[in-house]
Image (cartoon, one colour):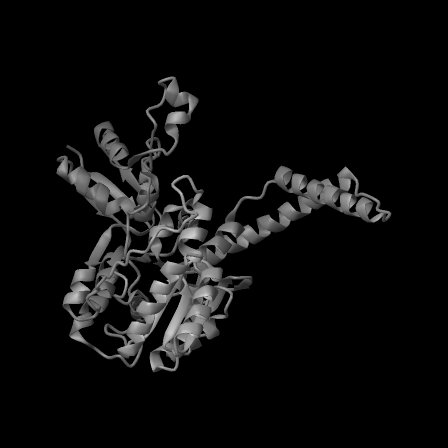
Length: 444
């Protein structure tokens, strides 16, 4: 039996000298059920089984994140497989970097162990439970690898937190792509997936033309409503404008691709969200990102198989697991205790009530439930415990704040999504110092 060569770079892997049997095995191993396939004509007619695969059978290629997975499957099936790849560029930072005044604590040895495994493997998923210090692991990894780094997240709060943290512990000025800002920098850039994905989207002249015509109709309508004279633009002019927009967006797309090609290390925060097309497309253009680290407490928890496999396609397999139990056993996390309190069903809440109305009546405006929250918060304050109350709706937070102020002597604050990052941080500091006894916060 000839030796199968499995060659790979940062983005793609390819099989050489692979017999048909090996290709069929890889195609099956990298296959998944396509969501909604059962509703298609091809499936209903029996011409398609509803499955697709990350393996390109004709080219013998697949995403590089599956390399070790494919190698293992082929080896188990009795094939001889040789991995072919250029050496990963060496890490340029010290072996045990210092990123803060925390120093070394054996309880947290898994943080540097994660970095050591990353340097060894090049790419991996770090499954770290909430509270395990994912942000510190990201800083340690950057300090160790010390190559142009892109920090990806879907949340603006996390983006700015990492920016401030890196700038506070290094002499770098961190670049930002997201939240209306586009200022990438060579050393370290934080970015929002949504912003980069929008710039990577291929523009379509018909879509732009249709949008311009819609805007023109709106302008004509507004002018007529106000009795103003308005000379509408010709269709030829709108077509020219659409063409100019497409050309501009193509230039922006090419610029974005060039920027992504520059980064040698990509960190995916809350990387279980990599299942979406946007995250996957971004990583596909990071051609020189030989180092890739996914940080998440819940990998492979998406509803569909394709999304879960995209995470591995981007970052590889799980390289380390840090569970909540381990963090609790080490004294890093407190042992959680839960108290459930039953409250009477509100009079206007029924099984047939639509969920939006049910949430309003049963949660936000449920006076008995809100009173119970105030009683438990006051009880904790009486024992010297700081209290945080999480809400989903701004109206609910304001109702609880008013109720607490009326019925207790505790100092209370409410922070929500519209507050600036510095205001949220200041409120948390006041809670930590005891100046604020009860902090209400929206989950966003």
